[in-house]
Length: 83
Image 1 (spheres, one colour):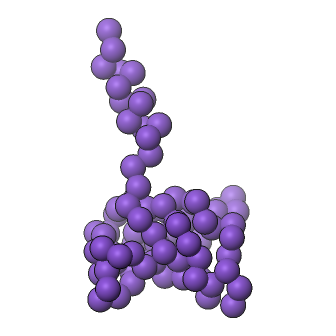
Image 2 (image 1 turned 135 degrees about the vertical axis):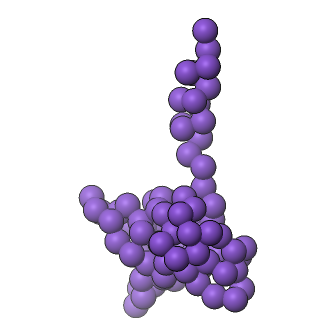
């Protein structure tokens, strides 16, 4: 199956933690106006509930992910501390 370019750059939450080289997990990704589940691979193990960024599509509903913290969330938190 062809690579799914629409999912690259999208964020999601791990439903099943990844195990690094030992195997994939599962991620629920916000894409195409909804959410879709994909098999998720990462170089390092990531826990259930981790927010991730899709960095590559392997096709066949499989993606490579990395842990992600939205920088805009951090800025919003800092704005609340000003004063």
